[in-house]
Image 1 (cartoon, rainbow, N blue to C red):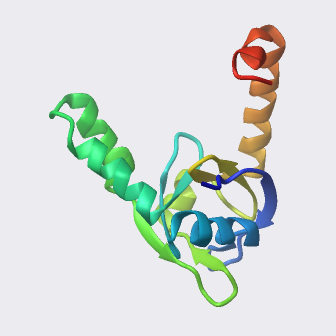
Image 2 (tube, rainbow, N blue to C red):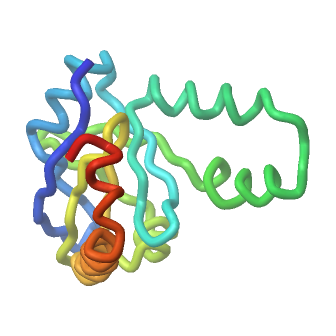
Length: 148
């Protein structure tokens, strides 16, 4: 299976359309057999799943017993999820409620994250990258633990 990896700087237009990197579209089609993605909230970003991966997430989620935590996750992640098809130029249109959540204005970073990819505002992505760098300086064993 091919995974989403790499980071790509991009822009969102006034209609909240975002061009997804061609490599990600290829992986979506060849690696997952999907031509549609599901976009939902992340903590400080948006998460985009191939439709088949999103279905796995939902199946696992719905197989767990009810709990207050599950209700929170349902409202935060499941409820706002939206299927997005690509236009002829490889763009998706992000719903305003999701782009507002992630603070997406114009400049964004599309970040590969294994079986999904994330959409970050450039400023929040830079902040998260700095935090990760600081963590790795303080915890170098984390790198060797995972084979880096």
